[in-house]
Length: 80
Image 1 (cartoon, rainbow, N blue to C red):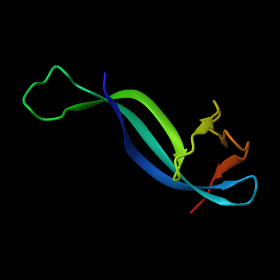
Image 2 (cartoon, rainbow, N blue to C red; image 1 turned 180 degrees about the vertical axis):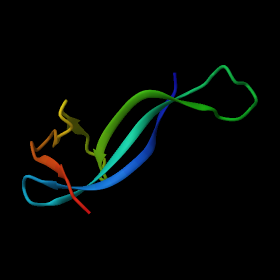
Image 3 (cartoon, one colour; image 1 turned 135 degrees about the horizontal axis):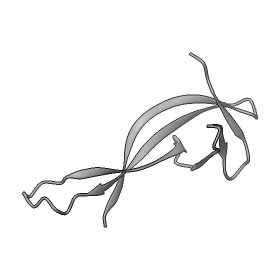
């Protein structure tokens, strides 16, 4: 089964280290093999993930807070 990521949203978040990070939200998509018209057809899988703009994955807790897995920096949504 072939998969890809589809960008849903980007936003800024402030880290517990004081830095501002750009966060990207992605939806996992899978190719729909049932359609054979010569075009690519993709369907959402219902799985989302968040990464920093540089590609590093974020852990999202049940309460919605995010943490950079490799550094332990907690992220908080920046208010516009």
